[in-house]
Length: 120
Image 1 (tube, rainbow, N blue to C red):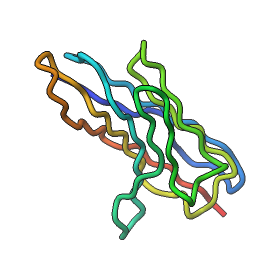
Image 2 (image 1 turned 135 degrees about the vertical axis):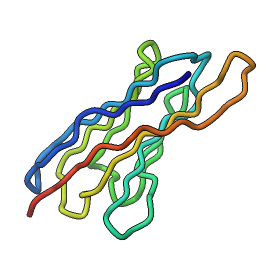
Image 3 (image 1 turned 60 degrees about the horizontal axis):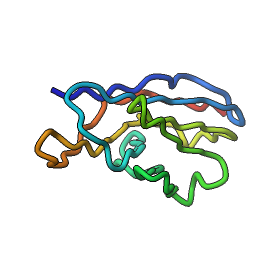
Image 4 (image 1 turned 30 degrees about the vertical axis):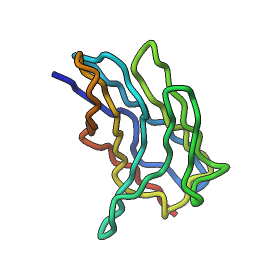
């Protein structure tokens, strides 16, 4: 059994900052990439940022320079530090972790999502 849980999020004014965390727990024998996605009302889910097991990072153009993704491999946790937030950053933020089982097979696990609302 594997559980992926996000925390953080909430309501913030434009220009403000917010931090998200996502922790994976359960039968984990390694985690490859850990990603943050978001979904705004009426829009498709989009990749915001990703980080590999070695720490290589990628960001959506819309968040470059404002968001920072990091991870703590010892805690199976990924973080998203968001600053200079804009109303268009509003949405449900989801964490996805590519987790290896005891047989070394990799499967994606998603969190339940956490709401981020940026007021203008």
